[in-house]
Image (cartoon, rainbow, N blue to C red):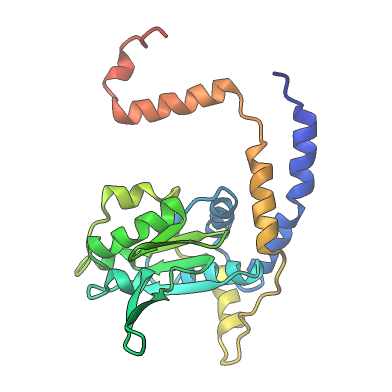
Amino acid sequence: MAVDRDRINEKVAKESVFVKELIAAMETVIVGQRYLIERLIVGLFANGHILVESVPGLAKTLSIKTLSAAIRTKFQRIQFTPDLLPADVIGTLVYNPKDSSFVTKKGPIFANIILADEINRAPAKVQSALLEAMQERQVTIGDNTFKLDDPFLVMATQNPIEQEGTYPLPEAQIDRFMMKVTITYPTPDQEMLILNRMGHTDAKTDVKPVIGPEDVIKTRHTVDEVYLDEKLKKYIIDIVFATRYPINMALPRPKA
């Protein structure tokens, strides 16, 4: 089937105009960290989740909160601790003695943008509470299943330095993230800009909304139309195959 690449390129160019505006809006609050900002936007439009690793104080929380404000969505921050329970994340059933019934109390996972702060400080049973939400975009509480709002993005953070009191992420949890982003300290010039911008008590961290949730969903449909040649698909499969069976890559490929 013939692919009209010119039409697709024109549509992508037209539909992505606001991306520069979105980045510019975020950079009115966030100094540096362009790498993180761009990958947050990639994860948002690709319907994926992001795992961020860095030392404290590099604007991880502020970045995801600013992104949420720039697209007019609901933001929730969940602080993962060793004593956190699955019900603290997804919600639970609360008994109502007046009519002897159970009422569903939804947890903080019911939002568009979720910050799972220091996710590796919670045990596996809590991390597993995120699996259904991140994969199926739904949450089951008791006998009822609730669909999560769209768009839905989880950005989880972990600290590479403090390993005491942390738990390694299960393979199933790692599989839910589209990419892992490692960020470093800003440059001296960026540090000076941060000091001048944030070094007073009334520092502004508000951002003007640029787009809405409906624009994110529309952009995802445009992303689905981007043409990917069969040669690139084969190249991707070869890379994946090499990570699974590195020794076999030295052998002749089996004939189809």
